[in-house]
Image (spheres, rainbow, N blue to C red):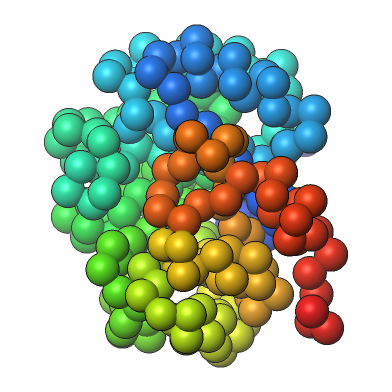
Length: 247
């Protein structure tokens, strides 16, 4: 039986992804995997923040065992560089190598920033994308602006998902983000939300506007972005699983 083409798998992926992806951090591999093990009963969509680890490559064998033991869990591997708001201090080549190894360890999606991707050769990104679905991401830590222009730049680089995260300085920025998602989500698989305390609305209602999913923290003390709320809050307080066009 021949393997299913990756492009076909990528087209199907948005249809089966849960609405909430829980970001998992830790100081070492054991801590990340232990937290993930405690989550999987109620959360089948996780993001492993490899950039939080001092030696992320050492985590890959444990991550592989985790993904093999929990084949129903969808995992994003992220190793965001310091220059782009993360904690990874290595080179772009090292970042690419880690993401490739994470996909080989069973992570079905990998996240790479636009700033890193734009400095790689197309064939390097294509090799990465042949192993896992590619999330091309961009974070604006100051404002919500130039969304259409940013997406146009991103769309020049083939990816399976385009993730645009901005900062809400007013409540109206949520409206700006959601209108953008409504307009563009029929053309691209988008992940869009606003950071900051003013941006919580977009984290909840963005999935109604066209964001494939949203991100949540494991606990109030483990936020990976300003304004991030916990998975429990999204489900219990904001009832994100019931959000629809009538909300």
